[in-house]
Length: 487
Ligand code: SF4
Image 1 (spheres, rainbow, N blue to C red):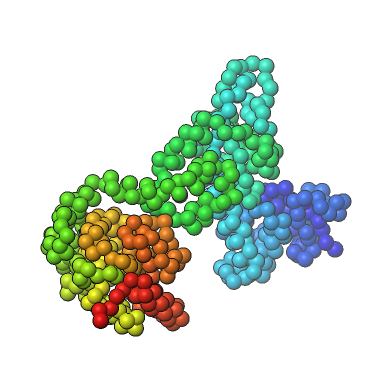
Image 2 (image 1 turned 90 degrees about the vertical axis):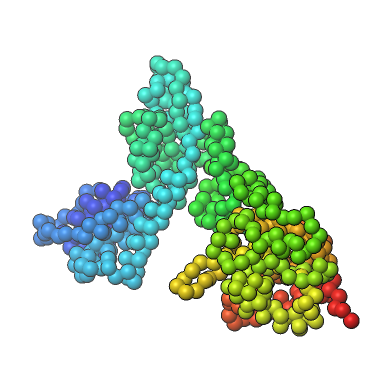
């Protein structure tokens, strides 16, 4: 016959479980739950006893206690039965059970524990206190969104936060806040429970709905200003932002109101940041006011606008006729280009030559260049492996590219790859979104973005074939829009 046991927390589970194990009650014969959902079927909290087995001693791995103690904050109602089942198996069947990670019960226990830890981490990161100036006894605590009425005392500050965790973790996390904000009086509300700190001790109470939580105040304004100032537009990784700052918390974080605005302004802010970094104006001063590509090329030989010139062999400047109607801009010279001093002569350049031929484009009539004129690489043994140039390096090299475009004035400009696209048209465009669709950029009225041939060589199979065919189409398009083959 099944015994129904009501459990209130981990301590009570421990107590009941000890008695059940000693009594020899198998997991199939007991049901443990927090709520009295079984009505009168639940026994009172008095632990069951067995006259025949009471007194039996057993030990439990510390790891189990640690895992279960944390997982006990999970909202999954089946957790107590899971804990007991594992405990029973550890004691009576498989002492090394916790090492069997493929076991369903063990996997579930670890999953619950992990979810609680993650939830606690988010709560520590995303709780934002709002300051209330309350009236009454400063030694009182806020327990239900209002200060307890007291007979004495004047105004005092109390900090209040509302947070929505996935699990009932307030008691797990509150000690962290009491250490962190020891000198403040605060209350953290969640939908189901709350914790309050009066400067000396923690107390716990009921939760409240978000609509009852206090509204914005000056602390929030200060936090937004701080967040806006520390927001680094050059390091935006939206997917990571969403994973680290889950969207469900955005409603309670004052700084998230700024995110759309800050993201929209990010490309401009990056450009401004870059233009204000010391040394980036070096290149502009080196670029001569000339309409002769040869003079430009000569001037670039000694460029030290960024540190790429220190390890690379030489400047690999653009190549092609001044009156070319088609300009192709790649990312940077590769290993072979660095040694030869000529753009697009390595494997990617050889592939490009084949595609030029198929598109009826004569290479010698095209102006070929790169967004960055020195080879960026990392050494691995004897090899020099391509390293994507940084935003700073691309910005530093931009005056050379601008000068080439100013002199050549191409009718059609093709950006090969995302780096070239961002150098030409800014960071707001995504290559996969605009590939093959002509658009007007500050550099050229007919700009086409497409795959870099190196990116075709780096992938295999269907993806490689697909990109190759798209690059081929885009070169055909460029040819039809502006490239005139000499008769
Ligand atoms: Fe100058 Fe460009 Fe070379 Fe940097 S990469 S040193 S900016 S030419």
